[in-house]
Image (cartoon, rainbow, N blue to C red; front, side, top):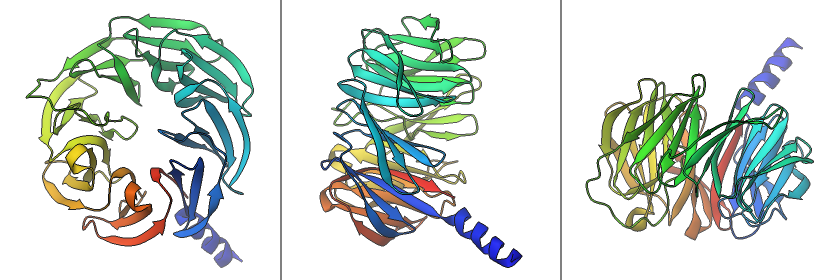
Length: 349
């Protein structure tokens, strides 16, 4: 009996489900332990769709302003609610789900069952929404501001103005809220314990046309260092989030979109826009030395490391494939047919 229990525990500790956004088909493909399981449909316009897990459920927002709740045990759509015309990001705060809208300019608070509790108007596109303790934090793209709202009382606790030109995304690590700006080469760091704010500027060495804005959803974070994809430059910026100091940069062969650190801290993986969109680069995290730089698909839109840092999964949009790639060799060891794949989201254990 004990042996059987141990086997079950081992199985579930390694169990893995992958949800892949079918960008043009309003659906998610479900890969369960490297076998295609099925499809969840009728999810809305999935350009730039974001999915997050909470317990046995997943929540997903669509570009046309819907939020959906999905049962990840039965892989079934439970409910879908219209909360705007263009949703861009969301977060959890306690038992609430909070969505940032591009259009209309508002932030919407919902219960875990997707009942609308409160809508706060900002008159701006809202980006970089995160939560810390009882607060929700987001940036106003059209007002150059950061707002802090109490997610229990809905009271606006703080507005920071003139934070930087055109914030377009943000990340949260520990108590640090880090906003990136499209209108200038810099990031702003807000200490949520003290409300101290500082902007760190990067020196530009020439700028190229930006084909795709770098996303912070998979910014690389290792201990106190952020590895930040540059806008319009072929490099990664390194910033110390504890001292608020700039630590230099790593050169890249292309314009970065996603920069991610493997869970074991050994590797940096980067995909690109423009002339390098078919390539994935793997680097040593500590030195920035390029280990491999290979053409692994046709327009690689997204990728995720597995928890054990032995593999990553990437979406090859024009090949209609999800690929499983070994590390550090970057050898494709398995492929799955997925129509117009973009976002890759892994639920492990």
